[in-house]
Image (cartoon, rainbow, N blue to C red):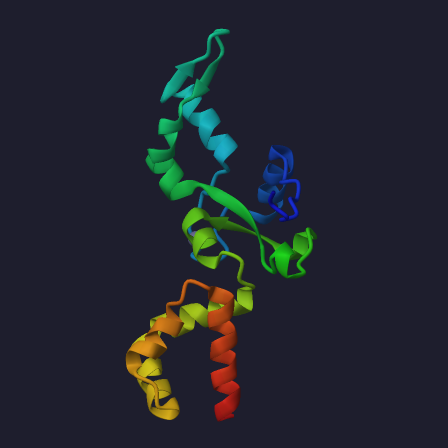
Length: 166
Ligand SMILES: [Zn+2]
C-alpha cells in the first residue's frame, strides 16, 4: 500500500482558466503556444488522428497519440513552484505553466533549487574543478553530485559546500 498522499489534480476547466489568465508560455524555457493533454487529444481527434472506436461506437484517441509531435513539443503541465510535498500550496501565486521537458527536469525541486542546479550544470566543468580543489575530491566525485538523480540531496550537498567556504 502506498502511503503517499494523493492530491486531486486540476480539472480541465481549472487548467484552461489558468492558461487564459497567465498565458501559454513555459515559465522556464519560454516556449510558446503550450496546450494541455486534454486539448491536444481533442485537436487530434478532430483531425481524425489516432482515432480508436470503442465497442459502443464512441471515438477516442489511441495511446499512439503520445508519439505525436504536438505531445512532444506543446504538452503543458501546471507546476507548483514550491512542490506540495515540500510545503507549497495550490494558490495561483505558487503555480506556473511548464512544458513537459521543463516539468520533468524540475521534478520536485523548488524554483530556487532548480535554478541553482541548472547553473551548476551549465558551469559543471569550471565549478567541479573548483570544488574538487577546495575539498580534495576527485572531479568525478563532484560531477557525480552535480548530476545526481536525487536532486534535493544534490542541492543540500551543494549548499553545505558553499556554506563551508563562506
Ligand atoms: Zn519549458
